[in-house]
Image (cartoon, rainbow, N blue to C red; front, side, top):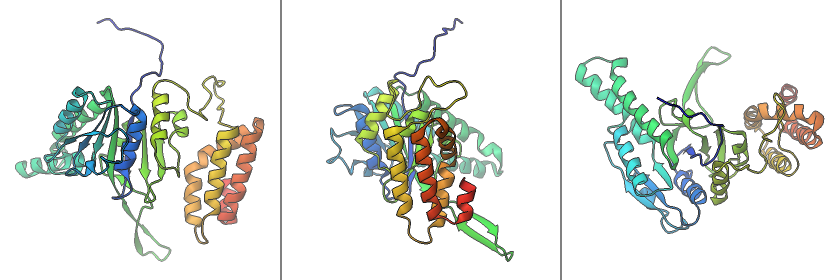
Length: 330
């Protein structure tokens, strides 16, 4: 077999996006707005609907409209593959799958398939998962190799964890944020994934390229503009506030001036808005951004805008938390 070797270029790449959260947070609407921006005013969007036509709820408010494919039980991986292929064959420029969670935990989904094998064989264990997981991997490969943009909506759940308090008593608490209902490794394959919070704004949990951090932003709702920016990135173009492509090896150049200023302004306003007793949320914010803040601080030695933003952010953070947290942040 002869292989072709060519320089790597990011052009005409296809985005694979995951949006997850609790019921009613706006996953479907956000996905549709993102898709419309991605494909333009006349581009073809096909929504694979696993929720009894709930995906058609926004038919009269999404500019340009969209088509749907009804996908009912059984929610096996092979049926998802068939639905994706049908959408591709029909000329979809962006496919929305709502919901991808059914493929994992729905009737006839991966977990159900493993349960059927356990009942049939009378034995539990890894052997029950071999075929279902293989089918799941084939479905995932189909997503990765699709020649169209794909947006996956996933239901979310708050995981519980337990620990011993200072009196040795077992305490069970739920996570502050939601986790997608899917295989634990699923979201790692995505270009971008984010939680949609109850106020419909994003908590970004992964971007696979530095420039995408200027497309998907914490505390901002998805809009057509988000989709348009993602489309530009997919075509190989730079997005506003992106890391400079010709940075010296080993040296990170961070966005400055207008983009950095806007980010700093939003962060300061957000922290200032915290009511008394919200130290936990402020600490959570800091943990989420700690790496970025530290790199901003380092780059600030030769970047006045970055240094000023870092100083302002940390001063405001210090007001919202206690001195111990402020000291740890510095």
